[in-house]
Structures are given as C-alpha cells and as structure tokens.
Length: 229
Length: 343
Ligand SMILES: Nc1ncnc2c1ncn2[C@@H]1O[C@H](COP(=O)(O)OP(=O)(O)O)[C@@H](O)[C@H]1O
Ligand SMILES: [Mg+2]
Image (tube, rainbow over all chains, first blue to last red; front, side, top):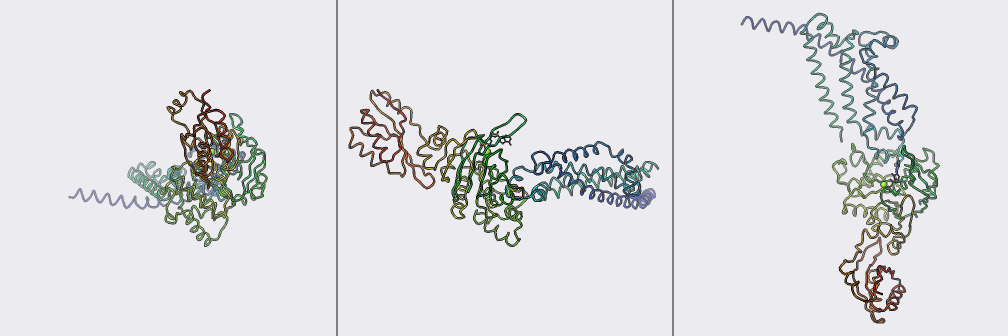
C-alpha cells in the first residue's frame, strides 16, 4: 500500500518535471520543422519543376539550366546533415545573425531539405503521363498552364507523400541540430538524456518522436489518398 | 482546310535516323472526313502530329485554314492550336479531374468567363451524351465514355478541325461504332472537318469521304472512298479491303472447277447499288450461250453508298466469256478476273 503510493508519487513528480520540458521542446521542433519546410518547399518545388521541364524533349528544354540545377542539388545532397550543419556556420551567421536557437538552425535545415524536395517534385512530375501533356499542348496551353493544370495537379497525391517524407526527415535532422544547441526535442534528449544520463527524459523524447512520426505519416497517407482522384 | 505540301519528317535518335515521312502531299477540304490508313510504323502518327506541330516537320508546308503552321511563333502557334482539336488512342484525360473539370479546363486555357464555361460544358456533354456522368472521374468510366469526354474537350474552343490519332484503336468493335457515329454527327451538325488516322479499314469504310493509304512514309494511293473500294490500285490497299470482306472461295469449289476440262473464268464484280448487277447477268444468260454462275456475293455499306460484290463463274467459249465481261464493263460494273482456267 505504502510502496504503491510512493511509486505513483514518484511518477507524478517526474511527470511534472518532464512534461513541461517535452511540451516546450515539441513546440520548438514543430516551429523549426514547419518554418524550414515552408521555405524549403518555396525553393525546392520550383527547382523540381525546372528540373522536369528543362530536360531534353520536355516543354521548355534548356540543357544548361537543367545541368546546373541538377549538379547543384547533387552537390548539396552529397553532404550529410551533421557535416552540413557545421560546415555552413559562417553562411548561417551571415543569413540569420546567429547559429544557435531556432533562428540559427533554420538555415541549415532549409539548405538540407530544399534539394530533397526538388528531387521529390522531379520524380513526382515525371510520373505524369506524357500523353496528357501532349493533349494540353495540342489545346494551346502555355508552359505555365501545363505546370499548374497538368503537372502539379496530376502529381499532387505523390507530392503529399513526398512532402510527408520531407517533414519526417526534417524532424530527424532538427533533432540532430540539437548538437548545435538548436532547441527542440533533439536538444532536450542530448542535454538531459545524454549529457546528464537522465534516461527518463531520453525515453519520453523517443516516445514523443515516435508518436509524431506515426501521426504525420498517417495524416500524409490520408490526404494523399483523398487527392488521388 | 488542311493542305500539306512536300512534308518530310526525319527523327534523329542515338541509333541513327528514321525517315518517318518522305514527301507527303494531301489536301483536306472543309467539311470533309479524311482518313489515312496504314500499318503500324507507316508514319501515320508522325503525319497527324506534324499538322499541329506536336512534331516539328523537317521540311515542307502545312496550311491549316490558310495559316502556315511551320513558321508560327510560340504564341501564334498556341492561338492556332486552340482551333484544332485532337483526340488520342489513350484519351489522355486528367485522372484527378471530373468529367466536367476535364472539359472545363480547355475553356480555362483560353480564359473563358466562368459562367460561360459552365453553360458550354453542359452543352458539350449533351452533344457527346454524358450529361449523367458529369461528376464522375475518368477511372469510373468505360473506354468509350472516356473518348467522349476527350471529344467534348477537343471541341470546347469551337474548333474547325478535329484530328483523330487512332481514336478507336483501344476500343471494342461496338464502342468503336458508337464513337464513329458521334464523329459523323459532329461532322454533319457542327460542320467540323475531320482528319483521322487508323489501321482499321472498318473505320475508314464507315466514316471517311476520302482516303489516303500510307506506307513507309509515303502516300501510295489516295482517292474517294468509293473509288478506293471499287478500284484499288495498290496491293496494300487491296489487302486492307480484303481485311473487311470475305473474299476467298471455298477451296473444294475451286478444285471442282479446275477438274473439269473446260474453259472458265472466275470474275469478281464490284458495283454501286445493291441490285445493279442483276439485270445484266440475266441479259448475258439470254444473249450468250453461257450462264453466269454466282459463287459468292455480299453487300457492304461504304460511307453513304452501298457497294455490291459478286464472284461469278463464266464457263464456255473463250470469246463468249470475253463478250460477257465486256457487257458487264459497259454498264459500269468493275470486273476483275481472279482465275483464268481451262485451255
Ligand atoms: N519520336 C520518335 N523518335 C524516333 N523515331 C520515331 C519517333 N516517332 C516515330 N518514330 C519512327 O517513325 C516511324 C513512323 O512512326 P509513326 O508515325 O508512329 O507510325 P504509325 O503511327 O503509323 O505507327 C516508325 O519507324 C517509328 O519508329
Ligand atoms: Mg501511331
């Protein structure tokens, strides 16, 4: 009787300590992820579109543009995030004014994610049936109309799945950014779980990450399915 | 309406060059349904795609409604294309759009006001008989219904010409018939000029006023539908006609004829109208000492004309046989001796 009550007392005490930390960290992770995702999408999606339409035999064939974008993306994608994070510190400081906190970490996260989104966009748009593009060319559609009314529209379900993948990658990367003192769940796990050997915080962080990833993937699948037709 | 002069198209690939079109000349008059028939790889798709510049011709001229298509700037080309509808073998509809949206999108491209789009789409769907499927997605439609949507979309911007690239080749025979009926209706009621390509003689037979036979990138024969059927010049043309008309006589019948020790000819008669040959056969039997023996016969509908085909056997004196053939020729029956037997 006594033992049980003290067991629960410990649990409640620990929960009172850990939960506010988790809420704060989760909030920071979401902020980092969604700001980075938005900026990365704004850069990555147009680049992905360009990668498709400038390739040989496509609607705006431009070999030079294609090769440059393709090369740039391969270059960035070759660098693992953890190296990128430290390698671009001067650039980050120049753009964001700081290298720590949410502000500081958004720059590397965007640099890390936009090439990925560009590739996702590229492969999604390449799946669109050539015949439909031809039908629209035959109807006198402009390149912009084909991008909007055919390419992006027909690939939207694949795009949602790809962006879901990008978000999940981002959450992973933002946790790694904890090494650079970014705030968020990764930071929490490193500061408490790793540096102070607080296994309870570590465990709680892992559980929250699992729930977030499962939830996001579920939402992504659901939306993609809705958009299929 | 469409005038093609000295059209060449050469594809350059890593494996070498392919001369898909070698000097095509043809004219399609306003209001006409013009068919191009040829085997796979003959260059049909290349030809039709060179008309709206989906493929850029290597050389030559393509006039559509007086506009030279080969030298248009991108913007002018888009304008010109809006007046040239096109439908395809695989329909090419947006999978993510409803029937309504698939047709409406053609009007959005030309910046038509919303209210007008709605009215027009409804009208078009009525023409193609799909009013009840307006909110369905392509995945919920049959092949024939998808092609109807594609036709409505192609017509949306009040086109003058409709190009059909194997439009019925993915459809079963009955659906093909119904789509062809729709094309005939569109041609007649909306006065839309149609150029279609196909490898099926049935399609040509049912709808075309004029036919060109294409082989290895060249037009080897071109004539009105009736002339093509009654008087084909090229072996390929004959093969296409044969593909839709049972012509072979039973071999035991021929064996029997051959075994007799007499002069005979097997003659194939072709004539317009289904009863045109009867009186003359009776007259031959009366005037000459031989009696024509009908071995097989059929009647086919070619566009708006009825065409009769008879295979007859003439046995007797060589001179009399030739006289009989002459009598048939004199009344406008086309004759073709398919076997000259005896001694
Ligand atoms: N884009 C292309 N690149 C290279 N060769 C092509 C291309 N399109 C067609 N061809 C070739 O041109 C010839 C004619 O093709 P096509 O016009 O499609 O004929 P059809 O429609 O009568 O089957 C074929 O030998 C084909 O392989
Ligand atoms: Mg073809």
